[in-house]
Image 1 (cartoon, rainbow, N blue to C red):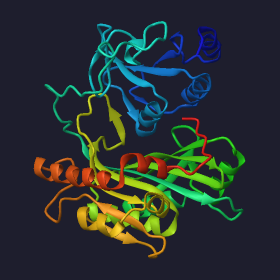
Image 2 (cartoon, rainbow, N blue to C red):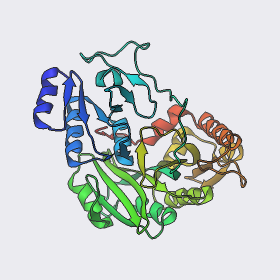
Image 3 (cartoon, one colour):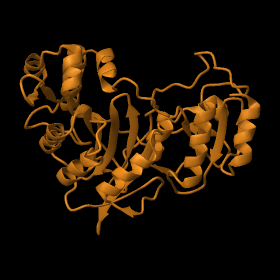
Amino acid sequence: MTDDATTSVKLLHPLLDTHGPGWVESRSSKPVVGVSSGLSALFVDCAEFGTRVALVTGPESRLTYSLFHLLDLLGGVWLTRASDGSLRRAITLEPVRSPAHGLGVTEDGYPLPRDEAPSSVRLDEGRAADPDAVPWTQLAVVTHHRARAEARLGGTLERLVEALAPGTRTLWGTTEPATAVWDRDFFTAAARSRMPSETRFHVAGGDASGPRYRGWVRVSRSDDGVVEETRIVVTGAVAPGVVADALADVAGRQQVLLATAWSTSGRADATVSAHDRVAPQPVAAVIGARGVRGTHLDVEGLVRRVGGRVLGPSRTPSVLVTFDAGPAGDAGAGADDGAAAARWHRFADAVEVVGADEILAALTPPGVHRAS
C-alpha cells in the first residue's frame, strides 16, 4: 500500500490517528472495545488497500472476542499504551517502539529484520492469573452448503447454543453490540443479499445473569456453494463430553469441513484482557467427510490411537476426535499439568496422523475468496 492510498483512508476515517505506508494506527480509550460501525468500516477499507491496523488502547482496556480474532485474521496487532507513553503488545506484553514496530515493519512499511521484529512468545514472568476468570469453551466450526435455493444458514449456531448454553436469547448484527433478535430465515436472507461479497455477522447471547456467549459467523461463496464459519466462546463450565456431543450433533446435520473445541478461561462477559495468560487446551475436533476422503484418512485407526468415534455412513464417514485425558481429567482452566500434557500429546498424534497441510487443504472448498 502506498502512502497516498493510506492518506485516502485517513481522510475517510476519523478513527485513524497516525499512519505510514502499509499501516495505520487507531486509538481507543474505551474500557471495552468492540467491532463498532467505525472500526468495521476502517477494517474493510484497509483490507481493500492491503494495509494493516495497529489498535492502541489503555493497559486495562478489553476487547470483545470478535474484535480480538478479527484483528488477528486481518494481520493487525493490539497494543497498549501506559501512562508514561510506553507501548506493549497485548498478550505477549513485549515492549515495542511504535505502532509500526508492533506490526513488525519500519515506519516506511518495510519488514523488520527477524532479530528486530516482535516475538510471539508470551512473557509470563510476574503475571498472575485473573481472580475473576471463569471457564471458557471456544468453538470454531466450518460447514459447506450446496448452492440450492432451500439452503438455510445459521443452523450450526443454533445447535451449538442449544447444547452448550440452553435457554439463551440470541442477538445478531453486522457490528457490535448485536441488537437484532435472532431469526434464522432473516439471517439467511441477509447473507444472500450480500453475495458474492463475504459477510461477517456478530452474534451474542445471554440471560438475566449476564452474557453466555459471543462470537461471529462468516459467510463466503465457493465455486459450488456457500462456506459458513461459526466461531463462538461460551462462558461458564461445560463438560468435555457435552462439547464433543455437540460437535457430533452438528456434524450429523451439516456438512462439516472442520470443527474444533478448546477450553481456556477469561472474563464472564467474554471479553479479552491484554494481560490474559491462560493458553487454550484442545477438547475435541471433527474432520468432515470431505477431509476424510481428500486425505484417505484411516478413521478407525485415528480413533484407536487418539480417542473419539466414527460419525456418519461407512461410505462417507466423518470422525470425531477427543483429547480429554479421561474421566478424571478436567479440561478447564484449573487442569493440572499432567492432564494438559496428555491432551496436547493426543492433539499432536491427531495432527501427525492426518497431516497439518492436509487439514488446511481440506478446510476450504475450491473457489472461496475471502476478504481476510
